[in-house]
Length: 423
Figure 1: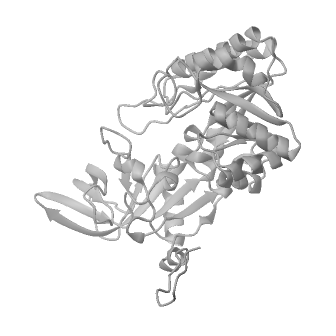
Figure 2: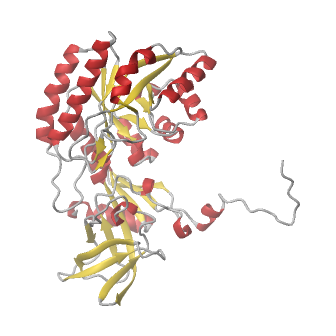
Figure 3: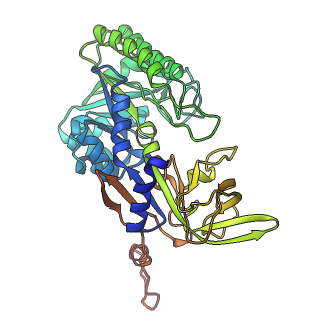
């Protein structure tokens, strides 16, 4: 973290805390680190769900990244950031009618179909629009991704059509009018740190593509193997070996491309690209001893960074944290809390930090992915933190911090003195 310390301090001095600070150079490096580990026949799609800030998406887009979106708002962000419809794939288990109609209007590269019901809905909307719509079928495979703490396939989930059913009925999908099925999509799991696991997952999906292609005598024009590459958060975790990843994935995809040269190979990534490029900064408000434990109370907690507090995990472990204000050589154990009236608002348990004082800035690294996008920012009406990009020695505010006025402005006050007539 030391190499990024000055960038974070500069951002915090300019825009205060709580705030997310992103290192633009690290973000670009992470993206190219992945791209360079794959053959040219593979397109990397950045998954906006991990962090949809338009400036970050724009920076990645300027480097060549395509975009994967899960809502109409993410779709509009991708467009604003410079993505073309042909470099957007749209997925998600619940696409509303107006979202599907917007995707059809734009002509995105593929609407990823999550159910047979959705397939027929798209067909109906396509007919009304006078179009043939490009879609891909999402399959929930029998194969479960090894090495993933959060498995999204290989077991009962709300995602996709289960493999046996999909393979058996794919012929009927191909006959649905007003849609063109251009391929398949499979996403098995996330935060995978083992290259061999990503390889086995991808190999299985490519094999599934071939199985369906041969059974129904059709050559598809896309296959989306998902991705799920992760970053280490905890001391016992080791980063994905990118050299091993390259040695496994290049021949796998290259051989497939030779056999199916007109099939676009898509690999999605979000956490791997942006996770290590993001930091969460908070300021110490007060320090106290309670029942023998020293508590450091800060201005940002689970409302801003629920992931660091262990949301979604059975075993709650600490993200890396550092006091970047202190020059003390002494360390001390602290419980790091946020501002909420909730016993769960602890973002660091038994943390060994440099001796800490009121006003010091604490920083949690590995915070680029699923920070504000998955946190309950309106808890206690504190609002969402600022987001700041440091790139090429310049500090850019890329999301304004919520204020009391901005939060209240979204609420509608009813005048109860007036008679309300139900329609």
